[in-house]
Image 1: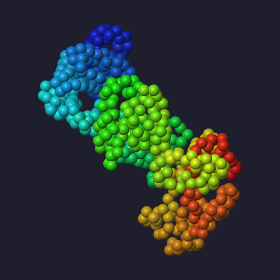
Image 2 (image 1 turned 90 degrees about the vertical axis):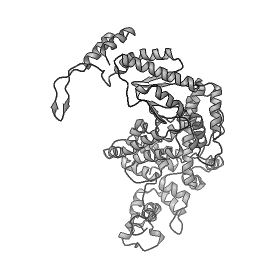
Image 3 (image 1 turned 180 degrees about the vertical axis):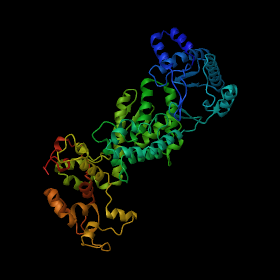
Length: 545
């Protein structure tokens, strides 16, 4: 990068010569090269700019403006975009016109760079085309640039595929990189760092970057959510959806990769309609391609080739339906008119839809979550219980919002509530408590399913099958005789009475009560205001205990 040419271009485009002089002088400061404690004599660099400096991109732009404008004037059909030192030249049209525009612009641009004393990479040049024959012809015309033909390419972090090839290799590579960093997140947790804050403010952004063009397939999204969920804990397993929900509780930031995976394609399509990126006939053609994915017996993601098909597959996963290129009908029957509703409004509706989609997966695994008995145990008034059951909408999920303050002990929680208590509550709600029965059921190296505390106290043996001593969560919390003194000291009287009134002869509780009493999960009463439930036991704000 000749400095004298940089000064000439700065004068031509009226860039401040004082700032340029300071930048070049700083770059030309003498320096040494050190290898294995052996230092060279002073060296003065004179053919570059300071990498990472604020002025570096501006100075590079001064040099690239002229060859870019020259190529654009010679071939107006070519679209030339530059990001730092990466240049993309593309064209849309018939085979002859597209090849003529891209090849001609490439020759003009590269010739100008070489005449300015700069170099063109001989190893990173790639040509992608919807027609392999056209790509071969184009490569033969620019043999001196060592251009290679690639079916898959990466432009500004976005995976591109030639023709109808869907490029998922970039997303897989990012997933592998994120998994390799899992140990760093766990190390941060051991040091007392806030892993959730790191993931929420950008830690997971590299994993979910650029889903707008091709969307995220269901299988890839599952692997991404597993990776983020594993980064939130030291070890072990549990309910992935609940774990991600608790990580976002009480904050506007999102950790779950499901949000960018759904917001990306839908909001990008809404923005294209709102701002008129493409003519309406083009949008209608893309929509017709995507509408063919409706009603398939197999996964539609194998046929996704671009934004048109990606947005249809994404809306189908949420239970939505695209009626036209400018109209989307949600699961509740709400119609989003993309020419009327802004992209910001559409994004808010998509976020709500993802939250419902996530809770529906939880409800599918926990059908007793919506039972009236759990609402009654949570001290929800009878009239509101009746309204909740009558107006029941799938996807409302569990009523966990009142517990948000307990996960931040330094703010509104009682003084005797510590971070250890908050971690224990989060572990219980995410089903990360491994009791003796659970260990025995999955085949871990345990002698039997009975509670070890009772076995060591001589109350039973591992060969005994007395249901009173099975190591379940109900036994650990409510019925274990060895823990009776602790229950009398710490457990509220109303809770003990509630348990004993529903305890069965085999020392178990109804399944709908087990979720509430052992994991603090109860159905969200639809339309129930926060003020109306301020005294219920679930909010931990009624009885002082």
